[in-house]
Image (cartoon, rainbow, N blue to C red; front, side):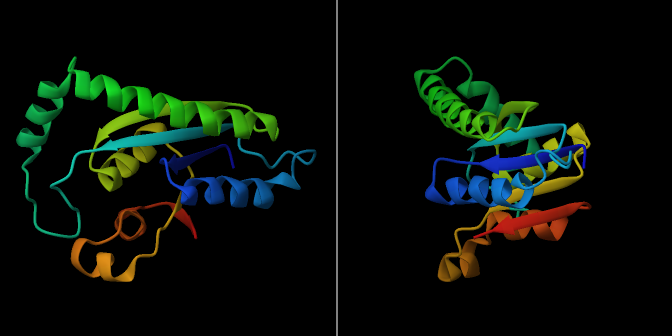
Length: 159
């Protein structure tokens, strides 16, 4: 496997996903089955859109919202948080022998941005966590479910 996308956020679930990835591929360090590149993705969410549900914000409204946030103190704080999370997980992966870690941050609906980044980067697999809140998923749909249902590549969901 040459390239995977590892979606992370600032929850304990992301730490567990990284540990599962390391344990699955850790035995292969000397055998060469570690991916050449790991796209480490953090998505700063814009609420109001869901692939599974009705579109609450149109594409143009989301783009206007993204544009209006540029340069604001709020966006700067979001970016600082994203950089901190990406740096934390990149360090863990590098210490465990995973080279070729490429951190990326996106702004938008997490499931859509994960799928879009996976396609743009031509990854072979998406690895992500699932929080598993059943009642929440009944009403909102989970990000991991949206990704799994809409991806055209393998998706590993760790819990």
